[in-house]
Image (tube, rainbow, N blue to C red):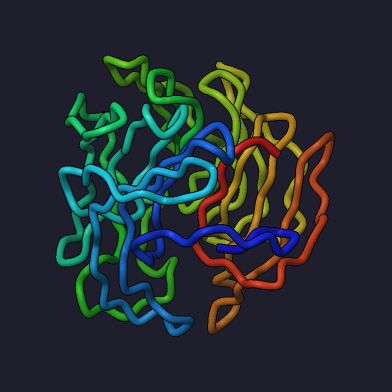
Length: 277
């Protein structure tokens, strides 16, 4: 595993792509779900979903209790490696999206209340008892053996929902429907940025509505993010504007506006970033 300035730490126990992760710091984090056979730049899909869950203690990843279902491209947030929620997802062999949710207590996953609009590839912010989810893809191309360039025959949505630890509630939609977007912040103060089709739009959420703010420098999707609504990081990703898709190693951060601050040595596609900027 490598980060912006070349500091390498211990690898995940199970190599995979399209993993979901969460955690408020780089010393207590959780990674779950994903695919163990990711597509190449030609994006030929022969996928193998996993339910593996791993916890990070600041130095080592440890395999722990699996999700109840195999899934990729799910949403999810975590307060740390002992409290998280996994939201929706999709699977090869079926065009249907999941609306199920699972709660993590530090040792096992438990199914909880389903949310209202089934979808995959959605953005999420907050913690496991106060969550904001938005966007997503309600009709992904996920059939086994299919060849696609991501963004082909897919349906992005703008739906937004909040979770209070018990119930999901539909609220005001995001302005630009998208999926594979990234998020930062809390349930009442959040950012949504990037996404498919390859976008540079950024929106800020104030607890009531989404408003457009400064754009990213590079339009992309499938990146990773961390931070708050006023101090965020956006790293890696790719663009489907070009054929084959272009993989980015750029990193941008948000203070009062977004700026490209570094170019990593290792290109990153569908990675996960955790902690504060």
